[in-house]
Each structure stands twice: as structure tokens, then as C-alpha cells.
Amino acid sequence: MTTESTDNQKTAEEIAAEEIIQQAEDQLEETLGAAAATISPELEKINELELSLAAAQATVADQKDSVVRAKAEVDNIRRRAAQDVEKARKFALEKFAAELLPVIDNMERAIASVNVEDETQKAIAEGVELTLQSLLSAINKFGVTAVDPQDQPFNPELHQAMSMQEVEGVAPNTVIAVMQKGYELNGRLIRPAMVMVSKAAPSVDTSA
Image 1 (cartoon, one colour):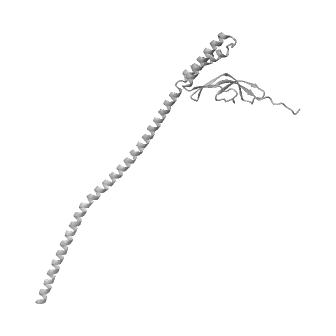
Image 2: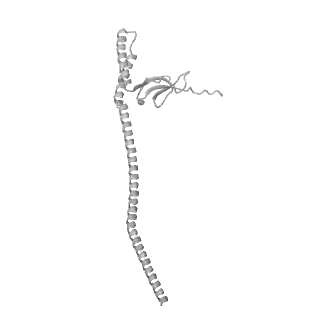
Image 3: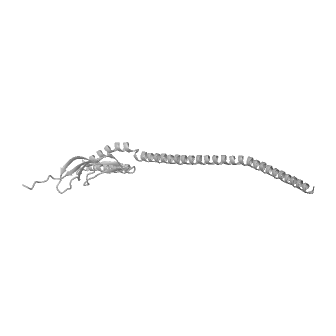
């Protein structure tokens, strides 16, 4: 009897132990399940935030690139506008200056035609000369300068050849006479100088 009682007592203890283990496992599963249920939404929220952050960073990068391009375009527009204003300032007087050139030509021709032996004409010429110098000084202040290439090499960009002539001792393509001065406005040609140009002498056949 004593042996059977002991066996029964052990069996009861084992059963009690198994129940305790089972309860512990059940509690562990419940705890893990609750933890998983708690962590999963947090992980999802973290993923959502990471995706939102990546999208925001991409948007910021695109906007930054757009801002850089827009700034570059604004700078280009400002630079072109400044260049247009500068050109307008430099060449606004081009038509007006061109209208003054015949007046200057006539005054120069009048001075050249004066008979220096005639005191009356000489006095008039001096007055015209002073007026001409005042006019030239005034237009020079606005960037108008004469092109007077006497004895200079012929330059087709600034000079217009009216005739050519052989001149002994003068190199070919040299301006030997200025029929009419040219004029520039701030470096832009508004009228070429009309000139006579030297030409090379014909070669002589010495083989005969």
C-alpha cells in the first residue's frame, strides 16, 4: 500500500507540474501575441514614415533643382536685359549721328574751298572752323569718332574703295586719298570712309 500511494502521489505531482508548464506556455504565447500585435502597427508606422520621408526628400530635391534652374533662367534674362539696355544706350544716337554727318562734310568742304588770300573769306572760314570743332567735340562725347585712314593699309571693313591708282614708292593697298571720312559710333561703323587705294605696278616681262 505504501508503494501504490507513493506512485499516485508522484503522478499527481507530475500532473500539477505539467499544468504549471502549460499555463506558463499559454501565458508566454499570450505575451508574445500581445507583443507582436503591439510591434506590428509600430513597424508599419515606421515603414510609412520612412516612405513618406523618402518621398519628401525626392520632392525637395526636385524643387531644389527647379529653383536652381529658375534662378539660372532669371540670371540669363537679367543679363540679356542688361546687354539690351547697354546696346540701346550706346547706339540710340546712331540715326541722329548719321544725319549730322552730311553737315560735317559740308562744313569741311566749305573750309577747304576758302581762298586764304581773301581776308573776308578767311574770317568766315575761321568761324566755320570753330563751329565744326565744337560740333566734333560734342559728338565725340557721345562716342562718335572719325575714320580718316590717310596713308594707312586699306581695310574693307572700314573703308570703301572708290578707285585704284599706281603710285611710285607706295605699297599696294595703301590709302592714298580720303574722299570722304568715315565715322564710327562706339566701335560700330555708321559710314565707311570713301578712299582711293594704291595698286601694284604691272610686272615687266624681262625675258625678251
